[in-house]
Amino acid sequence: FKRQFIKTIKRQSLEKMIALTKKDYLSECIYVEPLKEGDKLFIESDDMSDSFLNRSRANNEIVMPEAYINTALWLLDLIKLSNNNLVKDGYIFPALYCFRHYLELIMKDSIHYFKVNRGEISSNELGYSKNEHRLLCLWDSLKDYMQNDNIKESVYKLLEELDKLDKGSTTFRYPYKHNKKEEINEYDFPATMININELKKRMMQLYCFFEGINSMSRQS
Image 1 (cartoon, helix red, strand yellow):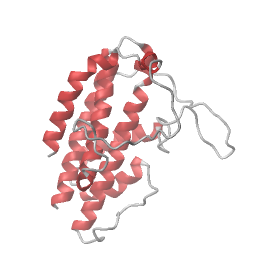
Image 2 (cartoon, rainbow, N blue to C red):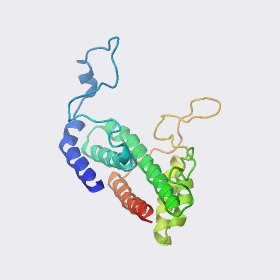
Image 3 (tube, rainbow, N blue to C red):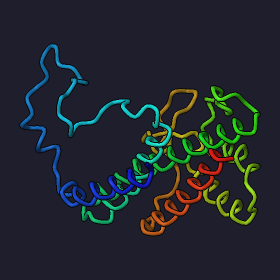
Image 4 (cartoon, rainbow, N blue to C red):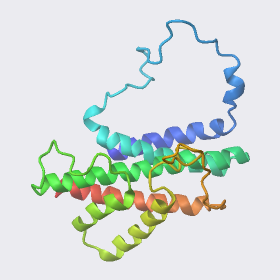
């Protein structure tokens, strides 16, 4: 199921990618009719090319993380294809957000299955705090179920790098910091030109690693 899902996403991405980089949605919006009373966001469709919301609910724990990581990688490809600096400097945020969210989802899912299959929790228990978003905290819960210390150290270093930039899971979602005084403070991390090819490679390496851990947790 996962392999077929990945192949489908990649094929569709390649078909649409070039067109999307040249698409001007702001201009397209000019020709859209204005909202009128009674308009709804979600309209039931008979078109089989449309999406079903929650059709795959039995497989959401597989479909959702896969969709986030594929979206992250796809956005990095868009950045490399574009000559527009707004695309390059803008799309990096949703790319990193989707990647980070994938990591959070896959680690939480793996923690759950490791604990269920070892009799530590029942199948309807999470096995982690629902309010826990820090990647390093999730890693601390997950790493004890793994053996290879060399790989664990390498993975930890990458997660630590990401966690330092986005401890509260907000850096890639908001253009400014949140604080208790409800004041606007700009993020103070330095402007850095990121090597997108290397970033994509690290993403794929972590993707392969965590998919393996997730499969192990489900089979343990």
